Length: 262
Image (cartoon, rainbow, N blue to C red; front, side, top):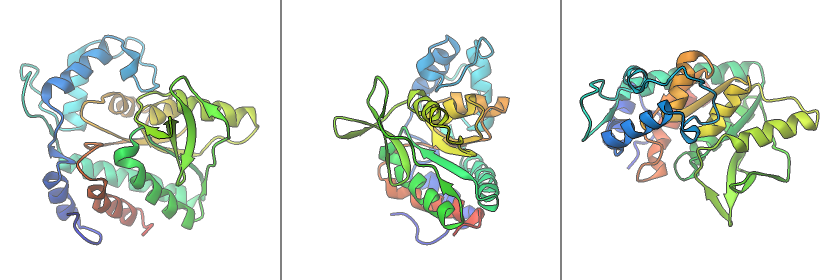
């Protein structure tokens, strides 16, 4: 069960490892390397709404960034078996994210929340949005009637999601975020000062020039590459769909406390 209250750093690290949000994660090494290779080979499904050109065409360069920013094994000859996320790197990134949230609160900025992984991260985003609203931020309400080839772009509990067949969908695509930003511009409404998201929602916003922060798994390298290039401000490494979404509660509590939003 999640630990109660707001954990200290060491307590959070232990919790992340125990629940496999970090540490020995469920995603196997071979899946990680396969995704790194596909991104390097130009498969846009793995670009998450970003534009990399030919800058990451070497799979080993992608692996080097992931070892540095996520904590996966840095040995290119290690092809199969267990892979890892360094929980200390997760908490370091949460602290950087907290600083950006604090800036948003201090400036009463417009913030847009979105997730391509509603089964795991919807409530993390919802709680963060509620805390920022209480601090005086405007939580951006998305325009009505938006859709992509995958489904409808909707908003639940202040978080933009993709809906199809009365179900919230897991998506890597940047098209839902593109639809939101395009519609805001068409309506003459200001773009967000900050996007807090994951998957292609975060990548597309950063590519569009909006301050963007996000969460990403060890097999999703795009947002970490974008952070290394400065297109995204923060990317938090974690397993984005563990056994229970309640396991993320201590992480969210730590984040909001670090941002002085508790």
